[in-house]
Length: 325
Image (cartoon, rainbow, N blue to C red):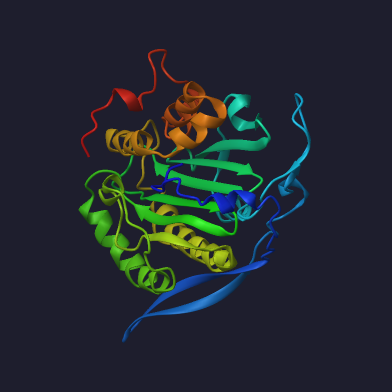
């Protein structure tokens, strides 16, 4: 919902009511080592929690007349791997309405499950958001980590996968900046330049980027589509990008970064995503346009909940800001 994909699935994809699951127990964290001859990569195996536990099972119990269904379960690892790597930080659950935390819906014979979460991270220096939508032939997950008051210090981490049937119709993985931050971009280039080349060679772009995404995408972005058989590689790329962001940017900069409400550059960045998100269409047909707009504007792309503050009565803080990037 934070990415830039469009709904272009074939009708045949909708017939995949049952999908096979992959279990991945390990991934490689690519460590960037600088040598006299340049940059080399060494792979260090690290254990990760199994992606598909009983909590992540594709089956769910019916409520309010929704019968028990089997949902696609390809990308549960997004949340578990993210929380595993972020465990070194102070994470506090963000309070949000129960209807947005978890919802089961039925539209005719089609059944869907929608869930979302948010976290206050590192004493409100960072803000994390996660959402997932599942259906019989659909599995979509997105995770975003934004800076709050110090966009000149902390970059944005962004990942999204859109699985329909047996294909990842859209994959987006990037580490970006809010506003114009030339010093931070230079540092990102030193860390992600070679790492991006490594993974972009394995996931070359094979989709046209929309203009709005071009405005924020970085040279190391992974953007395209692939077969679900390559999800293990995509998972490794996700963990490599996240580990590099934590090790080289978030962790060493905690003392330099401020905590507090969103900087106006962060507000503009979030609104840019909200305004262009394909989640309006995808969620709108499932939960209604009003509820979808509230989820996206006030929560997924909404203001950081610093000290538990709520959305102002006149609407999201984000919506009140200038749209200029």
